[in-house]
Image (cartoon, rainbow, N blue to C red):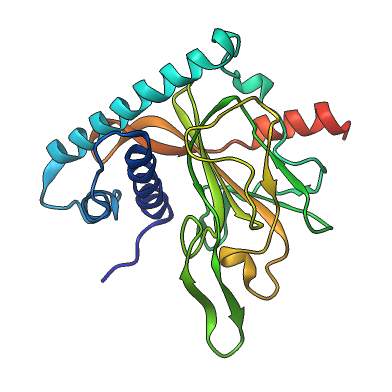
Length: 251
């Protein structure tokens, strides 16, 4: 069986977490198996189900977003506005080392890594939004003999502890991965740009020897994929985070 692409893997993770958030908010649950079947490999295998079912899942996601936008609008009596890209906040309290590794020599990474030199650096919301998912309590580790071990918890085996934040202005989603146990937010929370979300850890693939302590951050917004309009597609957020870094840390 062909391995899932990075884009497909993120979509699987996102849809599983959307289902969890929907369940907690009283919306109908979406079976995880269905989400994986529809979104496992958007760019290659062209599953026989066709585009109709994929379009249906886009509609389901949009129905969840209606609720999140309403929650966002109610928060603070409507005083909180969406954050334009030009005003995104840097997602760490320290400058760290921001890599433009959205695309790597070995293939598409579709995310950025920010390496830090000390443990427990605070992770902050890059934009105002609603927490769509928060996975804590990752249980796993790494050793030379068995490699990466995982026994549950967090967002997923590879992401470790992490958060998916819905940004209502663009309809985009931030994925922040490899956090330390003890997240500061829960699904459904409304947060301001710059609000503390947790701390950088060594969970998921960051537990591997030699990977270094870092925040993995990805951004997706509605576009066209699988022949369907409205599917979430990856965007390179480097320029916006570089601008925020220069503004907040004077680099």
